[in-house]
Length: 287
Ligand SMILES: [Zn+2]
Image 1: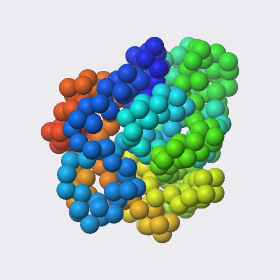
Image 2: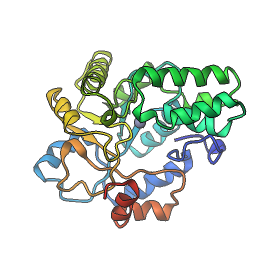
Image 3: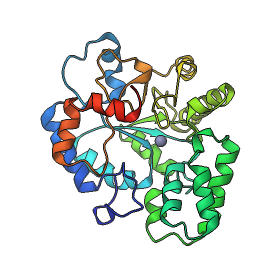
Image 4: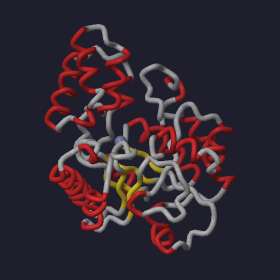
């Protein structure tokens, strides 16, 4: 969720919504059905006892602008959300791989940056070392040259902000350490990325982590190996980016609806109705 004044600019990720768009969406949600807190309903989901249409709000990564702009709106509506955190990014000021790639495509005014964009386009297949090296190279290429506001908007939250969200009753869940797409990594790396992320969150927040979001969360981006690790760590549920009804879904592969800047109030409501689920699954490559 970003400031209204910068919404629509070319460097804003398509999955961002403006603060006023977000407030309008929360208003629609409240009229459609109750907004629930995921860790509180996971037991009901497991037993099939959640028998009415209900909605939960989740955020991935999470950039500092969501702390600034989503938090007061959630507060105003009395909604507690779930924030899934890539622990290796918190407080570093480093930009997330998807954002670096988009910025390189917008400002490719040097041959090095164009080459780097091609390299980062296959970031799922990179080792963590290769990914970090490419991201560092991009940061060096920009130096202080990124337009004002870009870094402040896209940079990850600080640990103080994460802690504040937790203290205010929001859920903090895992999202790996380095935002690696698990399904493309060797087994040992997948397990380490999940375990280290959960351990750091639990140490820093002094509470058990119950939820997890798979980075990218699409077909092939996670699998039974990761679900077994999560079960072993007593994580109760995990979310993907498959668009479907939660009914009968595996608790360690819960579906979600992805909302972005292109959603009008009408298409947002349509998305929540489930009418677009089949189309979205085909677009995402689930079938
Ligand atoms: Zn993510």
